[in-house]
Image 1 (cartoon, rainbow, N blue to C red):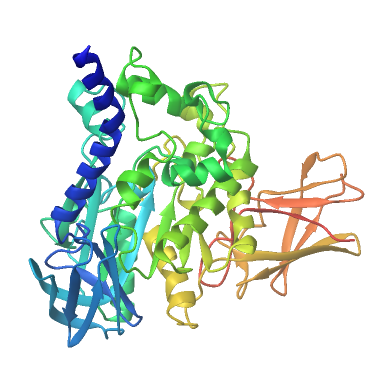
Image 2 (cartoon, rainbow, N blue to C red; image 1 turned 30 degrees about the vertical axis):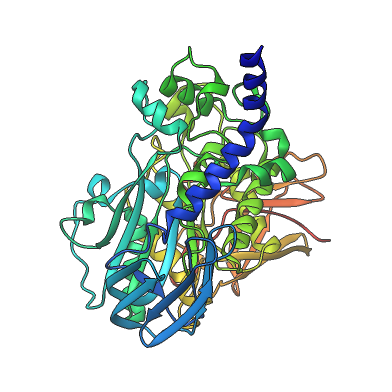
Length: 511
């Protein structure tokens, strides 16, 4: 009888004991910072410097760097934040973060421009894998990166049981620490990120830091916090392995990695909704950055649902900006192309063109975003193109023009502004169309026109006064026109005077 009573009391009081135990752990944990705070780090310059961390509730925290000092009292949840005056580019500095019980000292710290480089496999691809030149940069200022990389990439094959256990505990990511973007570390760095940062470093002449955290094969919902998905897109959360909103190959790869015998509710995978957010974004959110570059969309291209992609991409951008507490620049790559039937066999269908158009539409919906074109770099039978330098440089153009105010740098290729019918010809006006021409001197290729029935017919195009004039006798009352709208638009040849390719697009025609 006494034993039953004691057991009942234990069951009743255990939740309170557990919560108290967690609180005590929080209190004794002491001063702690994000792993990004380390020797050799690059801190964001030229704007108020927000530093965040953890400590014991009620403790006073002091932050010192470059002659600036700020104090704050740690909140009851164990979190604290200080905002210091903007630091000018330069260094090296010594940064101190201290409480009455503990002091953290960081050496060789520089102030410069910090960018987050994220996405899926085309951002993962390293200098070692694709670039024979693999050379050290010529810059004379610190140029460094901090990489968060999976210890078990999502390649084909079954993972060991120990890998699955670590993934379930959200221990999927390892850290490099801050490294110089030069030998012997250069081969491990994302090639696009490297060329992006090299261009910024060369043009700006100040320190540049890259935070690199892509995960191959992931979709947009993997990078959005789960509770936000529950509020804004709950349909992606239900029965993931049977969900029609999830790309089939992602389900297959997840099953292959974790093993078919493991139920979904017992085993997590990086492709599950919100997982990459927990392991790749949460540990670094709040670290001061200037902005983000993003390359993804391939995993969504198998679904014939560009509306879903557009909705999730917008949600990702807005939620990350909320996490950082600022509307930072977000520049992304318009999806490249591929002959998917040659790569994966007959009957395979990818909706590359629809995803590209959804990406272009985001330019009008979200402030402070930019888009770099990649279809001209595509490889026919491989989703990973080899020439990475142009992609990094095109993303850098966006930042240099819009973020750093270098208006002499053209940010991108021609972007369609409007299309209208005039004297039986469709006229299309572009932004950034100075010197509009074709890359090969031939007539404009890959133009098609549709009427009210939605059926597209090949059309002829010529350039006149930096406008594109399109004729299509098969369509008497044209309603829409598109360009480079094939899955593999290898013949698209419209460029501006800087040789930058026009965006793939589909727009309505006004009468």
